[in-house]
Amino acid sequence: MRTLSIGEVSRRTEVKVPTIRFYEQIGLLPAPPRTEGNRRRYDEADVRRLAFIRHARELGFEVEDIRELLSLTAQPNRSCHEADSIASRHLQEVERRIARLDALRVELQRMVDECGHGRVCDCRVIQVLADHGQCAHHRH
Image (cartoon, rainbow, N blue to C red; front, side, top):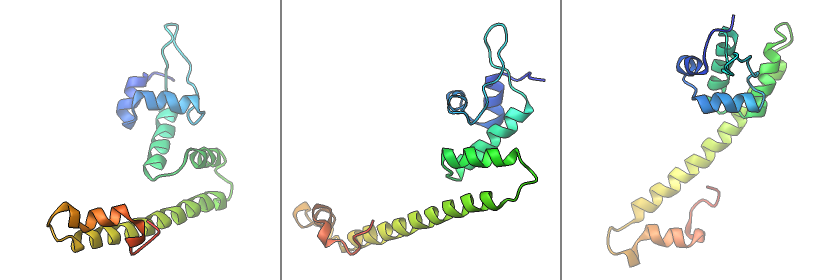
């Protein structure tokens, strides 16, 4: 039975109303039936699906990966190999981002450590920002 308003679904899932509408537009969340007054009505399955989407987004999954994962949930007896592959690809991307952030942290720390806190004309931070060649790491 579809008894939940979009506002109630938003409160229960902590997903903003415009985001719920967006997920409907792009097909992650099926468009719900509407009342005679043209108000959307949702059920518990919609709440669970939206919670799944929200959690996947919090973990950084892209929309297309979420779409694929959702399609897999409709086939519960199927092998989870595809879901594992999606998660593994995402993990590899997260590890690449962490490596880039580590390099960025090291470079920023080096700039701050080399700063003599004197005048801007002698500031190591400004010098390094002005000339990428002075960076210790060129991939950040």
